[in-house]
Length: 121
Image 1 (tube, one colour):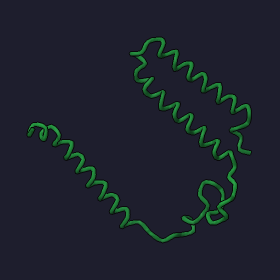
Image 2 (spheres, one colour):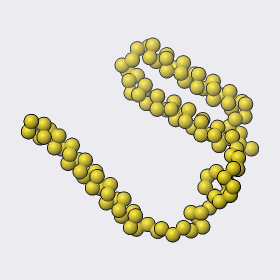
Image 3 (cartoon, helix red, strand yellow):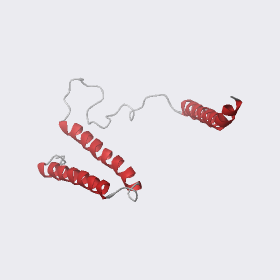
Image 4 (cartoon, rainbow, N blue to C red):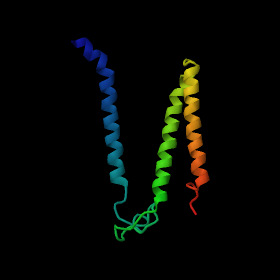
């Protein structure tokens, strides 16, 4: 059993240093930051509406559309990284499967573009 402790000792040291460093960074940022609200902190943030209005204001659907498009193309990139790394090891079937996947996403992107979904106006 003592053999296991020796193998995992570097992991415990790394974990202890990471927790200590995170605590120091969090503590210093809390101590050195300003806690008063200013005009910039209370101003409109990203959505274009005032921060303290009626909560039943309707949001434009374009905000959701941009978020969904971002998620779709972000996931596409996350599928491309492992594919590129294993491109030398996979067969032609793996290559053409990803090629069809990219073609489908490109056709969808062109369709959204032609429909005007990306025009903000």
